[in-house]
Image (cartoon, rainbow, N blue to C red; front, side):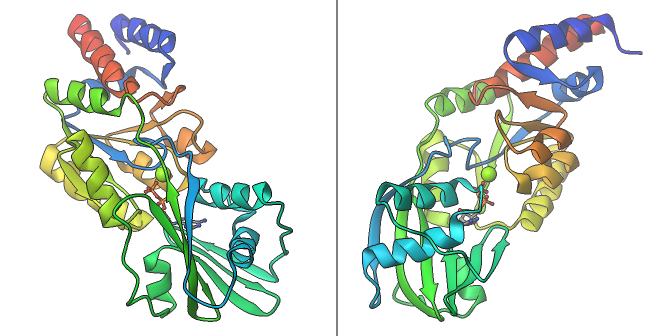
Length: 286
Ligand code: ADP
Ligand code: MG
């Protein structure tokens, strides 16, 4: 049976927009030693804006954007949405790809007007043997590289912002004796910059969904009891595998379903607040 104190904990959470799916999730949360977070949408706002376009081939800026947006128009990834928005702002007309595939943690491969278009990160380019030897990863922001018929045609610099309360949330967790880690599919430069800015203890970049799952396994061995916080479709398996899985507000349905705890808002402060509620409930219960 679930001690009464846990029901009051569930009530306290709901007032703060924190949905505990049951007394068991509260109890598990009272014992976690480390919080592992996804970057995009969890630590950052996930509201990407195209900041800069660089051309490396014969295509003009609007042609590059039209190709890329034609690939990205059906994707719900925040990066894809920003590319699509930029094309809409410029009034570009988009094409319907003949074939299209979204590759998790990489980007998109499509055929448009008989040309093979790749839009995504360095890993996508490496996977399809596109020469990016002369390409230097930006020190901040996410990049979407675009290749046409196997040649790099240009790239977009897309910037996201760190949530305003991220720093105080990480500090609060540390004060509670909780270690912090960040997992991301994004590049090393951006990941390191964000982790450093927030003083997050450990950072792992360029991870595919399967790598995130493996890393979580290692962290669970090191820290005994680990909570994972994420928001994306890709995060669902990691949420399910963690001792406590927490889905961040307005996340993907799959993430919300796999989670033990749901933060209805996207404030990062919800993380330490929920742990505090869980610990208080546990103290009263026993
Ligand atoms: P995070 O772990 O930061 O939440 P994801 O696992 O969702 O990131 O994606 C990892 C990386 O894969 C992104 O930073 C981006 O470089 C690339 N990516 C994923 N989907 C797309 C897409 N539709 N278009 C372009 N790039 C993408
Ligand atoms: Mg994400």
